Length: 276
Image (cartoon, rainbow, N blue to C red; front, side, top):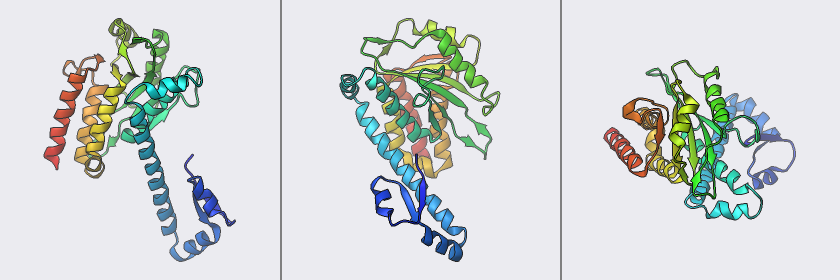
């Protein structure tokens, strides 16, 4: 985990070697006495910068892996399902880099009735928009088409979104499947059976689509981080894609195609450029 260690020993260099933020105890006491709480603020900023740097580097590595199946197939030769688990980790790295608030449940809850992760849309207090949350599940396969698991298991993932006390009643909700291959021909009917009458969107995308969204984010990252209008525009684009169930937003069940995603990204890019 990302921590800051306060040490009384002469081992700052040892901590730095393993990329752990550390501060000498006597320096901390001195700074606290002279600068009071400013030193805590300064050190917390250093930690956030350190964590942010690690997230960016991890996402860059993940984006390179996700360009083809070769990395994961090679890992499968080392241990069964290792490639699938690393595919899951890499998808999470890109979602975390974009959303900031993204939990990888699969890392600690293997075998339990939970999705691989959940990502939360940001809240915009200035206009009171709560854009909700979506669960995501990755499906790396060596077959020609990808299976999404049993309806009962996926229904539980959706149920968890509705019983989450952190979400408001009208918050957008979605279930996202990410795979390295095309969906099964029965995907739409299976997905309808999962959500039934709930206002939950089910989206199927391939890893190349997630990569395209991430590259679009990178192209405008500084603007999105610095300008709330740009941030709102980018996450509205993702909200429409991942949780909006209206017919103009793809309906309740969406199999994302390259052509559709290209049009959506181009539209959002134009909006962002107009805000510059």
